[in-house]
Figure 1 (cartoon, one colour):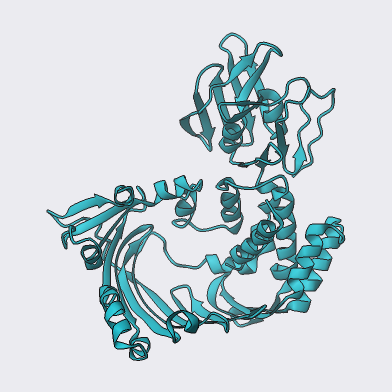
Figure 2: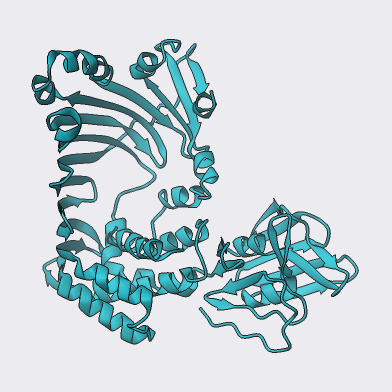
Length: 496
């Protein structure tokens, strides 16, 4: 991962939040195969058998990798079965087979490995797939192609205490909302946009988007109707008659867009129906529904969305959310563990519980936090000292240079009642090079109002307002598709 991507990783963790052990193995190292394995930022020194690359999979000596990851390992010579136990998890598999039996919290599931464990005759050591073993233990795994290294991260080594360290911010994820109930949701939005494209079309483009949505949601099941209108009258009025004749057919296509959406949160099946489909493809009938599976779509990107969706239907935990993000990761490098750990400590210093001021009046506690660039610099300095980071490190110098180009302030106010969210207000202004961003979000567990302005004089200006309100309803989402309707697979259409 390059410097820019590492900085993006830090920024991504900031956004999520505002929503380890060192391993040493003694003994003579095995002859290097050029393939390495890193666990929680430390490279594993294998004793007498090196990792191998088999069919594109990193295979490692089973006992050392499993014990390094904190498991107690037993081997039954007669059945050639390996059993590994860690905390409340146990899994077992037979040499030469692809089935692995995993028991966690008393629940047994069987999964198939993509490469079967085998015994290497030259070393008499049993090899297992590193990724599959790590993922079975709920660890994050990625491959650093440049360093030829499989990177394994135990997410609890970084995020185990997130709920305690960020209990105030975590309140944004919790409320007294009954997740088993069904909710009527209504919302609206408007965006006014000006793009400075004089050199391209002779004048600026001015247009607006406005829309609304309404529907029923119960857990992750959704039955929603969305409407959107695009207005470009100001831009059209400034055009020549010839330009108007060319652009009007396109604008007519996207005026008054209406779309009905039905999603089954258990299966991941998403169905969409809109008259714009027939406008774009005249062969489609008005009653055509496009179908796609959101889980499969994310699987193709290397992201398992299922754990996150499951968490959204239960009382959420910031610690669990961050750990799930790590176990779902697909990209990274040998610096990822260090970057994540440092980003976590930085965020704890910047927006952790100790950074807030709290006052209680009656049954309401008000938590406030006011930040500017000096607070960020102070948090960075504190993090550098606690983590023993070298300020002359190239990445650190680059990060400090980036901070110096940013000017920002943020005011966070979170009110709680009986240890749950009562109301909140987030207001921030950020200036980065020639871009200005102002944002204000206010709300409570059942409503949200957003006002945001983005201004980049060299390119565009945009202002957005949005509002959503939820209320309990006795209705349930209707996930049925009308009888006789035609269903087309969205992915198959893309392949045409």
